[in-house]
Length: 255
Ligand SMILES: C[S@@+](CC[C@H](N)C(=O)[O-])C[C@H]1O[C@@H](n2cnc3c(N)ncnc32)[C@H](O)[C@@H]1O
Image (cartoon, rainbow, N blue to C red; front, side):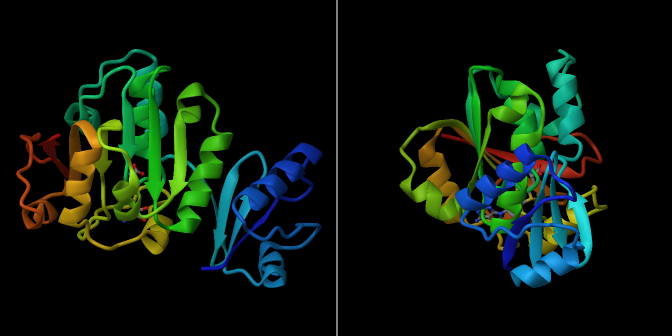
């Protein structure tokens, strides 16, 4: 997919220069918006998709523009930051994150879990999110950069295939490593999930990537699957005890 960067109509000088900088940083072509429609801008840039960078980060693909948002992650993180108990957040219950933790999210997607993890680890912690779809990585990276709040600023997005990245990562360099691969049996879509499904890397999680993650983790590796857990079974992983009727299952591997 050929991606280019542009802006909304009438960007402020600061937004224009931020969009140009982002294009340069990401080695993407920049195409000024002027008074053109996004379809015209895409045609001029010979691009299939546009990252539209202003006060928000939007992605334009196949005639539709969608603003980046970390889905329910925003609400989940807000509740956590207000000091509410995490009961009911199956990801946090399974990950058992602690303040100051370094978390590696190997399947960033739209970054909902990464944002929740960043809220949970607090100011002394950090979250690195790996995403192999270049368009999703650029969209989420620019989205996080524009999301107010210090939790968002603790998330670093890297465009990379986790299997390759983990190979080169130092041993025991993250407390917890997380995998949430594309479900092979997807359920009702959250906003943005259609684009995630269209652009996301649907290759099944490999046992080799999990083994590499165990080497990189200090405490353990968390793997998420949809019920009934066919991917966990394929990978030889037993799900943690979950709530009755839960839509998601988790397996934990001690490092
Ligand atoms: C189900 S989504 C993750 C959703 C995410 N947990 C959230 O909260 O928004 C899975 C994501 O992992 C990415 N992915 C799949 N295989 C990958 C790989 N080998 N390396 C990096 N990212 C990968 C997909 O492109 C997709 O965006």
